[in-house]
Image (cartoon, rainbow, N blue to C red; front, side, top):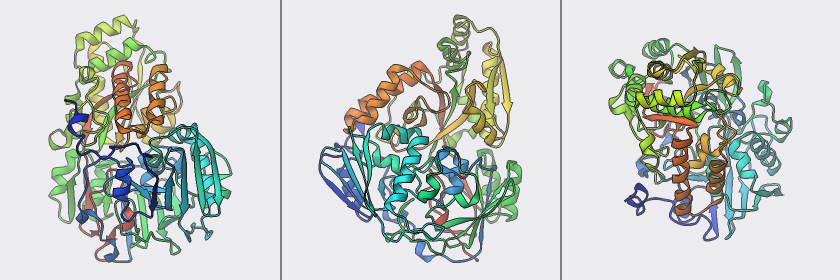
Length: 551
């Protein structure tokens, strides 16, 4: 019996998303409606106690966050990088958002209607939502923002391949008119990395090139950009004109309360400095701390250390357009050479922080499958050597991009380098800052392998290697796999989509655009001064509902 069958009694996606006409108003009480419509994320449901009682916070003060580096842009449409999303979460908002159960629920949308055939999606916007520049959000702003996002984002592009018309029905209503169903529509509009954030029309009409000036970084969120100095700080101040959602705070949805006067993001590339700064009280939250610091910080006075559920899949992307990794036999050698347990232990600390599992959709989701597992964690040096010979590898250095700003990336890369060199690869490990990795991985002639992770997602279309298959760096462009990805997006019925997803995961292991090492958890590290903390952080910290207890 497959994992799919075992979970069939409890999974959320049971029926065709548009098997009935559904009208959703706000987010209160829509969980059941979305379940009936087949639009839930599939993660274990939380209890009412998990909802944030954010209305009882303490106003005032500055919430300081130690980050691992300077984000390359504040233009959320441009990149999937968490380094960007973490800073822009409080600034920008989307039409739909994930609640505490990872269900997409209306956010900037007040009322959502889907036709019986799944081809017409009507969204009435909330009234009185204000941008940071004082303008009121209208359908024209939404139309311009969604259109720009669709021209930049691979997921947005996939959606708009199926959009016959995207129209402004009236001043507060937009409508997607599709040529065929698009199963992950609401998921796509809820995504909060390279999210479809909404901005003033005048800014969106400047084109698809990255926004660069501070007066362009305008959203509808509870915090607005006030000041930034490269490599020193990014300061967001409370937006007094914020139109909060009428429903209770719930995951990334519902009410957002801006308790601190300011959120200050401080780039600190050195992990030891981030650890010391948290211990000293220089900031209240420290991001991207490696798991080997857990014992130290869990015993530090005034510091809270909590191990989170698995939320990341560590992986190595391979460049199909490079002369080396464009060769299937060499990719097979790369796959066969790696001992995943050794890599995970070095990178993440082993134990409660890691899990060996072949599934690209996590074990906790209804999408989990073990398809292709015979090619996972192969750890066969002799096979790797044979495949290198078959591929005619001539010792040309493999340009392997990594960084020390994410210590676990560096550790994983060093162990992988040792294993690969042991079977005959020559590895040119290029250790650079993460912003440069992001910049260089977009250039097909600049690299052969880069290390990264993929965060927890609620639908396989959100995996960059699937939803942006031939667009995301690595440029996986197998004709068969592209056809399967297209079918996954076009289907609405869960069972039909699951069967396609199993085939795609099999292709990942046989065509090898990427090698998954395993599942990983991180710990959250924050000061006891922080109130309102919630475990719903797998897709980023919800800074807006935090406060300082002693402000």
